[in-house]
Image (cartoon, rainbow, N blue to C red; front, side):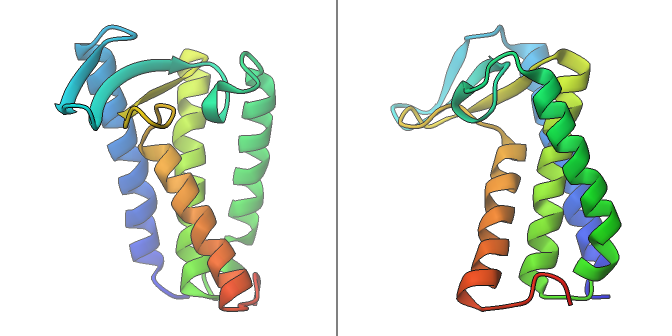
Length: 152
């Protein structure tokens, strides 16, 4: 299996970093509060997101929890095969799973997801969202550009 230790670090590091920053934002800011990091470009903005990406499907917690739980169970079941395959598919799947688990933890604990990265030209997002997007891009790149098999 390729890089299972690195995959564990990627997974754990993503979840811990995301949850730590979310806890810091929740402890030090009020919902809606925004602090410029790089004025006009990057702000730390505390948003409570009860929906999915861009706030769609607001207040459909059962749908998000069910989807994330099913994905995570499938990921755990397939992981031994993913770990033997393409590095991009392996690490991309791990990043996606870590992001999904971290956002799912918010939904279970808080009934919403804490978002905080605000570029002012895109909806506010978090580290878990970055992991989900980067993981998805890695898997799609491997499948459609490199023509790798999803499961060896």
